[in-house]
Image (tube, rainbow, N blue to C red; front, side, top):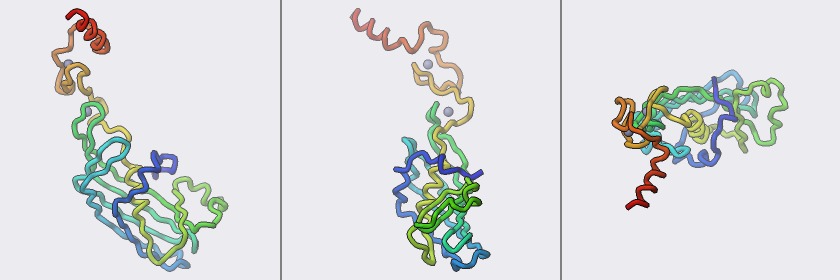
Length: 202
Ligand SMILES: [Zn+2]
Ligand SMILES: [Zn+2]
């Protein structure tokens, strides 16, 4: 299922496409039969920083796009993203691999076109509208490729559903078994208070 515009988590992060260019050559604007496809391998060698998390893409990102005119001022573009992503687990901080693979659908329309007037389009909630000033012979899909990738990155990464995380007291990885803190008296949340009490005694 394609992501919807409401899934957008931050518009600010979408402004920089980092020199990314994904140019597709469009069919003639009056040809609604023709469908053009293009594919790119994007290295993303520095990874992607998004919402306070760093995502590595050791094998880069594979991008495919298909474009077709619905009307002379309305272009449908499907962007398919697939990548192996590595990010630290939110609980144990170990690198957790995850695979993303999804198609996102965009509708490019000419500024001034009353978008949404057409009831058929209105019902198609899976499309993300993109208003543009003019249609040339080619179109750079980079902003939408970048946006698609960010949309598909998870807001919280877990190495596995039931990751036990780190002990809040000694920092041991509880996935490897219980730490020596276990069984000791006291709630780790009172550690700070106890520390203060010791401070008074000394
Ligand atoms: Zn974990
Ligand atoms: Zn512990």
